[in-house]
Amino acid sequence: MAIVGAGIGGLTLAIALREKGIDAEVLERSPELSEAGAAVALAANGSRLMDRLGLGTRLAWHATVQTELVYRNGRDATRITAYPLDDRYTEMFGSPLYSLHRADLQRVLVEAWGLPVRLGADVIGVEQTEGEALVRLASGDTVAADLVVGADGVHSIVRRLLAGPDAPAVYSGTSGFRGLVPVEKLPSLPDPSSIQSWLGPGGHLLHYPIAGGAVINFLAVVDEPAEWTEPAWVAGDDPGKSLGVFDGWHPAVAEMLLGATPQRWGLFAHRPLRQWYDGRVVLLGDAAHAMLPHQGQGANQTIEDAVVLAECLAAQTIPDALARYQLLRRGRTRVIQRSSWDTSAALHLPDGPEVVARDEGLRHFPERFGWIHTYDAFAAAAAAADG
Ligand code: FAD
Figure 1 (cartoon, rainbow, N blue to C red):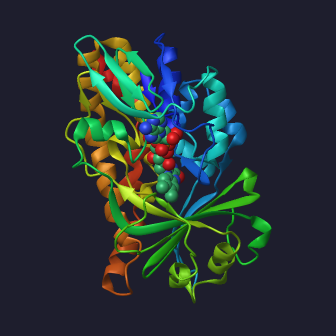
Figure 2 (figure 1 turned 90 degrees about the horizontal axis):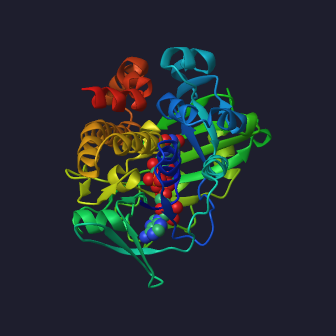
């Protein structure tokens, strides 16, 4: 089996397949494994799977657990609503909510995989015959496999080959600025051990602690530009003008934004795809269902995909396994994609009656979104196999 991409999805799949006695080769375009971006939050639906793959202790060692989930008015810091996390989150959803540096998560996965990843392997094409799939690399080499898994991220070439040029990632009209700031540079920040969202017209700021609380990871999202014209999804422009939307907000917000030099990330999502596989080629993770980060679920859904695909492949022939994988994954990811997209606009509302309704909705967060966190992908795959 060939896995295109050594991101969170590709590496988790390789580990989950090995648990089932299935060999895989991981092909990665980059010449070295280095994780761009700042931190990632693994919710209960992701952390319980990591634990079952035997990675729980290593993950816990790198991870930070937050004390509360807090929504605040960005300008006066009023707490709109708050929920206790730490042990109470674990009790409610059956596994911890972890935050950690992306490089640490990647290190845990790479060490657990333990085998070489084929670096500098830039996949430019996949062809299929009846008996096998052939991966073409930019170097001219080919790799033959019984199945090719496209785990090559939001701008996936495998997705383009499978779904055609009409299924590109869609720019959301919002940009994210990510950064890491030492906590001592944030003297005005209330509740630094919480995961918090500061909301206001035209923007919001999300942050949570990593490195045992010594560092705060933030994502500031603004409604611009209207169109994305950059060739890459990271632009090196001066963020000063864009971040002007936060002028007049609480001093903790200014301290955070001035504490780092964030780059602009265009925030993209896919429209839901009807067909996730064709013959011996299948999609996983962001390649299948890139979503906006506002439910904190992109990586978690990717991990769920990996576990379910491995379970299906261990139990059935490739055609049956791919059909069952799609059945198990497409509906769930579609709802979360949609919900993340809708949340984007709600977080940036101008002052007015819609804000009152939005804030009321935030007060019912566990009832509305608990189903995402309680989900057990191993159990779902096992139940489908029994049924
Ligand atoms: P990726 O991690 O993107 O990996 C794809 C890999 O494929 C890369 O290594 C790439 O180099 C390689 N590749 C690409 N093309 C080729 C090719 N042609 N040949 C070979 N290799 C190739 N998710 C969460 O769950 N929690 C969060 O808190 C969270 N925060 C986020 C914040 C932001 C601002 C953003 C943008 C995303 C966030 N996400 C979060 C989403 C999460 O990062 C992604 O969903 C996740 O990384 C997807 O994993 P993946 O393996 O599918 O793709």
